[in-house]
Image (cartoon, rainbow, N blue to C red):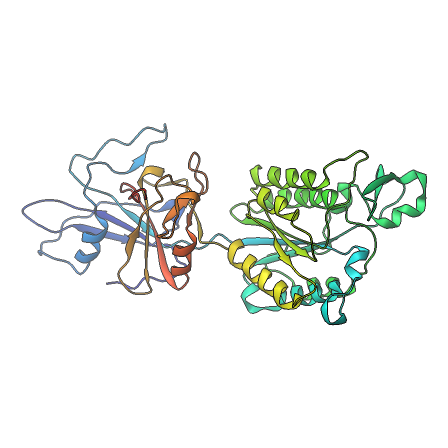
Length: 419
């Protein structure tokens, strides 16, 4: 069997002659990008077998339909003979752009365990993560909050502890507590670059001073604006935010009764928007359960809450490692079409196998969503109504770490039985 090369698209066209005279499928193997994989008919060989018969028997699931739709969205006419055209290619994981939004308020200077400041422990954990060779494939950027402001920059300034927002023009000195204008957070300290610039990220972390309050809402709103623009400029990539903070948000609007709810609503809107930005949350300190609302709204279930009275360094490192795993899932782009027509979402399959070994078909979850994963794993669509990516369930993703993953287009999707 011909060796498949990881990270290179392999288009495999199978057309079975289904003839009693030949008894053997005809094959054409063509290397091409996934979005333009070509399927061409092949003449049946004279011999009764070929070196690729074992592949054909696996992939060629008998069905009279070609498994593609035409440009009008209708199912393509079945071929005159009972054949199944299967296109296989080995996709790459969707690359990730990770944006750190780090709290540098005055309270981050408070001591953690062993006499170190919360900021010092957080900074070192970030630097280790950025320097880790495993982070080399992740594009990263960073910004901090609060940003410095002037009296004209925001309608009011948050006051820590009192949990109120005072009009900035009442006292120009209050500007030192930080900006409540989202526009002040649209420009990152270090932009996300492809590839990343670890030295620049580390330099800005080491130089950052601590002061001010915690205007989380404004900081996130400005960050989402920046990341939306980034996603539009670099389609086909996953964008995630990592919010690291040691306290509940201080309000940025006079009369705000639910600062944490305001932030959660922003995170939900970013997730539902066209860029589908996920928000991970790290809480540094105690009594920060409210941050779970932001993480849940941002599509990451719950915040990583660390305890300053325990081993904060280890907890922060573990949190960042967990985020690394969750933020770079087994997600694969679905091409819009091949040379045979548009891809039919009802005729997509996922195949998995150890490098160089026989692959097996992984069934889709019963409802095509992550909720149907269960302990047995499987795969699902990012959006069943308008799928753009195929994503593996957590347990299947773990098994796929050192394995070959193939997407097959053209044969009816195999669906897992409901449990």
